[in-house]
Length: 271
Image 1: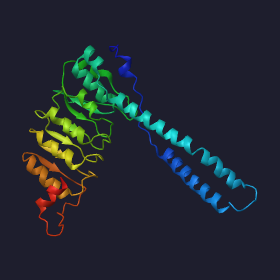
Image 2 (image 1 turned 120 degrees about the horizontal axis):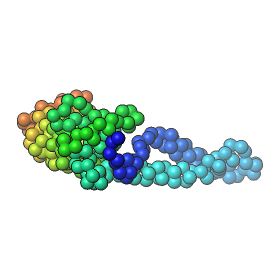
Image 3 (image 1 turned 30 degrees about the vertical axis):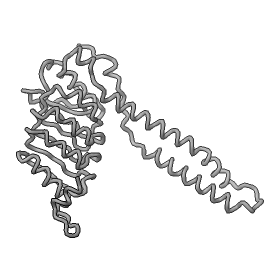
Image 4 (image 1 turned 90 degrees about the vertical axis):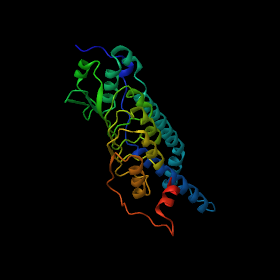
């Protein structure tokens, strides 16, 4: 039987759900409220009794603020769950050590990892289930981490900072932003491969913080939607990290010509 893990670390329900239906209902109620006001103005001079349509509009308009409150409540719940998922696993660290605590954090967020000296990867499946055999590797550091498409954020980095991480994959992570990239300086002596492709919140300012990663050999910045001048940004990265191979797919890398500006002048303006 495996050792007992603390309940506060085990009970972390998943919250990452689509909000499309709530947003659609919210927009519908907004339109209904507008239609109701317009109908009242149009029919203000009429003495005819209220029709079924008018009654329906009245009913939906009264529910507008109920939907607004529901959306606000859902947003608060989401933020609370994000915080709980990324909080520091201090109790697990105290009981099992930093390596098991880091491994458990990775798996609990739906990621995967490989221990130093091992070829086997431990990963959570699509339902968040995973193999508990990682508990047998106490005092074995984590070397490679794959957190792609998880909700890891800046706070969660505290669960990895004691590991000599050489490879870190963060493809498509919605909470990875400029603050997160600035926090990667904790791995400046070990990190050799970094994948931040398809992260929607990363900007040029965050990429500038990567200059601290002295050991970085491979960097993927493909398909970052908030990078407006990718050709110039790639030049900047190559100058900052001359020892690093940059992968940048999904862009038009032609240099923009704005009036008579030189490329370096445009780059300064972009920064």
